[in-house]
Length: 401
Image (tube, rainbow, N blue to C red; front, top):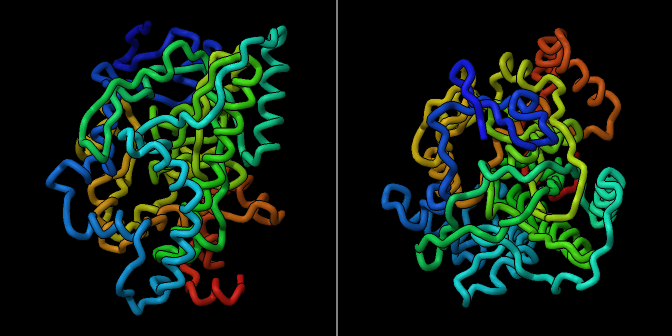
């Protein structure tokens, strides 16, 4: 249910315990439409002739099949690809385990790799305490960040889409769920510094491989308590809006989630459940104000896929969700660069001033400055000190930081 006010729809349901869209910074317009997974740019690259090419085919193949030839460029050697592909191996094994059933688990289909729900259901007398326990075991399983939000159907895909059979299917695995446990895995800081390179793709692969283990373990824990739980990575629903609702971070101009502990250098996972859990609320720490002043990702993108200026509901193409005012990315341009480089790109993560090693105290001071009127000073220092510059992959192999 919703009410219309000043051309913006404000949710009046139980999202985040009634906190709603304003606290999350969402501006949902009257023409909002839920997203069909078929229109995700990676799914489109399998069926849309505008994105299909020999380079796109090679891009996917080389994550699983050894290359016959290699580029001379630093970061694209045989050992770079060997490391990248090895980092993806655990995730790929889990993803492909039911491929003969036309399922691509974790990317187009939710995971099914767990045991049945226990017949005896543990009574949850205190959802707040239960939520804290779930967060505790999530970090024990390896989650770097965890938050919980109410189930919000707006972000659930209207349909699933199979890359293999090129068919759409019902997306009904989350029916009856009431909460979503959002997790984030930090990607390796130094590997991201080598972007663009095949070597840097190992940061992504490791993030997904760790994330798969974490969400599967959380889901099985909840199922062992007698409640339903469904583990998910990129499948089933849009992760960033729910992560914002769960208090993990804010939208950035690069179209990514910006977190306080890792900036945009994270991979997201989610667990849908009907277990009674208290919900977190959105948290702001100045990202919107900072991004309004900073354009490092806009300037750094080699194919100009990132829009400058204010958030907008304007669409680049069908791979953007309709009816949400936000910073968006042109997925078609972005994917074209991935295919041309034959590896995933994270330049917008590398160049982001929020991308820091926050184990160091001076970076923690910097993020505090970014949330104040001194953010301009932080930007100048960031640029002067060379943060966001590319590390040569050969330097990473030597173990130098």
